[in-house]
Image (cartoon, rainbow, N blue to C red):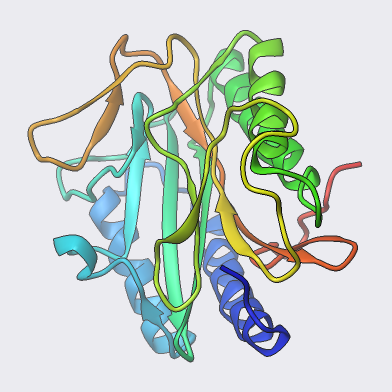
Amino acid sequence: MTKRPEEIALMAESGQLLARVFGYLDQMSLIGMSTLQVNDLVDRFIVTELNARPASKGQYGFAFALNSSRNNVVCHGVPSAAEILQDGDIVNFDITLEKNGYIADSSKTYLVGDVSPLAKRLVQVTYEAMWKGIKAVRPGATLGDVGHAIERHARRHGYSVVREYCGHGIGREMHEDPQVLHWGKPNTGLRLQEGMVFTIEPMINQGRHSVRTEDDGWTVVTRDGQLSAQFEHTVAVMPKGVKVLTLRSGERIPH
């Protein structure tokens, strides 16, 4: 489960290329675009501008460069020409990129146009929850510490944490060990070691944590129809703490 320093350096290179994809997305207004249009632009940018590979494309039979999860979609939303992003939507774009044999994975929930205060609050708290988890990462800490930090922050604000989906180890493969739950008890679970690389990607719901999968076999939605938000970074356990391999330009690690 651990990577050598030279492997982490290659993963950091993939991570910084992926960060540039989100910088590219940040420049789009998104209103009136279809999620398929966004997918196609991202696909082209990864291949032609970054000389890299969209790692999710063709994996598990998935045909696209990203997942687009809008409003009450929790994760694994499928890009569609019929799904038009509207003023007031929130939408998560989950993107993976492979360069030199190593994969990086990250996601961000975007506010489309004029978003309601309640939706903005959910998105902000989800982002904060991800960082609470990241800041718990260091050698000797446990995965339970990470999950607990995330869940405590979400529950403090009246939200629930999706339990069916989790973060994961990553490297030459998209999904490796360990599984990284976004809920848990302190000082339980796998003890973290220097060189581990994994994602932290909490999905936080406005209402209950229950979810269901739609008939397409991919799209996961909240059972109660309320909003869901997600953020994700790929992180490495370093000798004295954590390194965020997918940190975006202008993004600051919160204190």
